[in-house]
Length: 547
Ligand SMILES: [Zn+2]
Image (cartoon, rainbow, N blue to C red; front, top):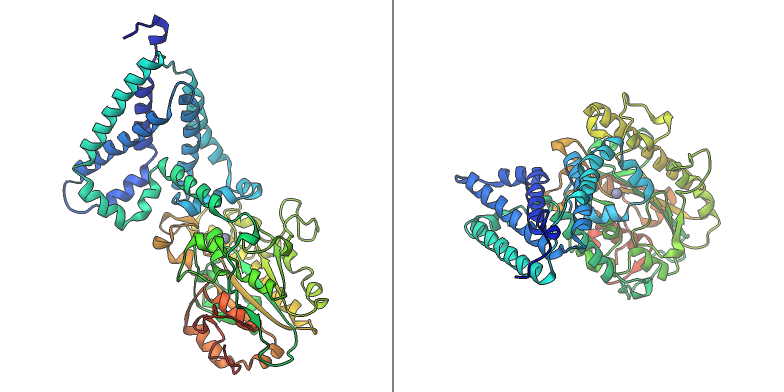
């Protein structure tokens, strides 16, 4: 071998530093993974299995680091890894989340205001101490430098050693490990940092494949046409209030011990008690409920690559608009339909940072009254979006107290957290009732309102907070949502509406977000082969024949 000057032989070998980092990652940053895998094990020999698995994971991370790290990339990679892993561990431990594709997409698609609400001092201190400080310290570690031939030779040797470690540790346990990972697919999203790295890769690959322009979307229901069933009917105006993070169990109309929906209870609404969401986060549920695939034939790639219900209706010259007080329409609306109300400045509803959901119904009547023909308005609420529940409602809605007036929700008393959350629902109740009242004063159209929430929320049950759990293992708190309809008398008359039939269905039938697409087609008299009567909420409860 070539002999090198003494100075470059000083310091730690890159490979040893990588091994050291791998050991820290696997042992210190994977507490939830180790808990989950231990819980999934049954029978004897568990300690040996866990030790083997630990060695295997260390070997795999070591291997990956050695393949990526060279003289120039080593320290930047380790610094980045330290900061991101500290943030990942904090989120996973605090909120009980899994860093799967949907969760990473949520994080990447969040806006600054949303992210700002999530960050508190505790989180900043945690990331600073366990991420930023190590990231800086790593630059002071002297690393041995060799000529490239020597370095390559030595690296090859270490890689062979790491491979041998993986094979020796992995071989005896694979027969037991594979069935466990198959039965509990969510556990892989706890292995840190590979969870967020792999999920980020999948999200970015998904963006890459997604059509860039609306014209590239696959046409949905190409045969769709509007056939007016009741002859020369009056134009129809439907308001779809798209709720946020409201769970079914805290919904007063569903029989919750507290009356969280006092205003809607006074109106003639049809409340569906048994409704399931398509996903556990906005980015999954919203595109899904507006697609013809739905949860029953869920395929996220196809959903993103296809036109939504709104595109179909707009093609039929129905006047569609999307009023937003949140983070956009998640690809389901065309640019021309989108109206961002979240940055309005009306001091009655906005504080310069955010607007309360009242902003959505402020001019609702005016928007419809002047319109010609059929019209659909989607109101995208901020609803009960956490963890800053206490910022979701004006002071007058702080009726359940004491409240949890911080984003550090894990530190609040469970009762205070539920109080705060219930206040957000009181306010949603008020906004939805106001939308109904605005519609009732409209003379030019037959009017209807649909309210549904995109997903639910965990408030600390089983250590889970917020939402976004992998759907397969998601608790009912995250997947059961309120869903209600309201029709004006004139609209009911035109539909040949059977109120008794509808209320029985609402009380008993199990429905999902999938009904939105088909019910909406029916309400606008759209005939297409894509329409499925079994997913039309009015089918069989209206004298007017279905297609
Ligand atoms: Zn949401």
